Length: 435
Ligand code: EPU
Image 1 (cartoon, rainbow, N blue to C red):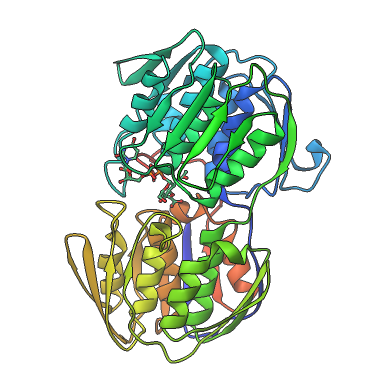
Image 2 (image 1 turned 120 degrees about the vertical axis):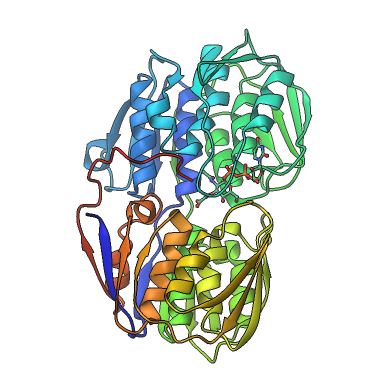
């Protein structure tokens, strides 16, 4: 019964705080596999994907403490892999979270073997992991596939020259974690430049890894024989921050977004300004957004530092309120427009053709019962409901709980009329093929 009930019409006013980045926290937790020592991570968001990763690592033998038990704030986590008893990522867990494939590289590097369930498709497209496999094979792993599992073996991985056929975020992270314990030097080219890669590299460096160039397209790693424990603070979530900036702009509010990293928000801020919102960078971790008369502007998703695919759905909600014709081009994933149909049910004027959606605005949105299909699609429906006339009911909000920490409490804190019916972390049996 996890639903949001949202009554639209209130401008959001006040201060809203950003949590730690889910997509940094997930690889960073996997990095704990690489050492027998304790890894303490701060600023971990309390979201469902983190719970899932915690279950995954525990099933492999990790001892995990969270919050006060780790002797720190509730958002810190301590992970110890003194023994890696079972280097297996089971299908029951992998099927609910594709990022589980991030354990492949670290498991081979630490244990010389791994069994990881194939993730399968997901709501936003096929999302294969062939590039992870290709890189690990080049480093000397033998990988076979049977009964839906990848089985990988390697004595010790070897440093090699890798050029990614296409840019992949978790692929870069997975191979980076493999390379840090490999023998010799690994040169990786055409790497993802996302801040989450740099975040992971900073943690690995604190653990004793020798990495140069993370955050650029060329990363050089000198393998070491052992890594130690570390304490590391995860960067703020740039997609949560971007979502709040859109929330301020779409509701015609005045919102101060704190605890973010303004330097990671360049493409999103530039586009919001082009669309008529007033954005001010008040400091390195604080951005203010005020609504203005919204006008059409086109977006085209790209790898970082381009406009993020993870903000495409939220931007589409904004475009429904902008004067004129906006085009929204999705270049990263093949099937990431599921929110368009739901937005149309609320009265948006959207046409989807292949990779491009055209949105004619402004449309007077009217509240409706809508269905969340994936994490960012859910965020776009929340944004639309905040400006729709009447009371919307969003079903399947477990999707939003995967990546936004108590979003309803944060939005209610700045004036949104939003409430949850149900329980944030109630166990679910029907979750599959998740993004
Ligand atoms: N791809 C391949 N082969 C591979 C790997 C990727 O063909 O081996 C393709 C994918 O199918 C896709 C493109 O390459 O078309 C880019 O995929 P990428 O691997 O970069 O995506 P990802 O690493 O699986 C991460 C984020 C996503 C985010 C994308 C793009 C995590 C845990 N997930 O996914 O986040 O959309 O990068 O920036 O970091 C989200 O948070 O909502 C989310 C989906």
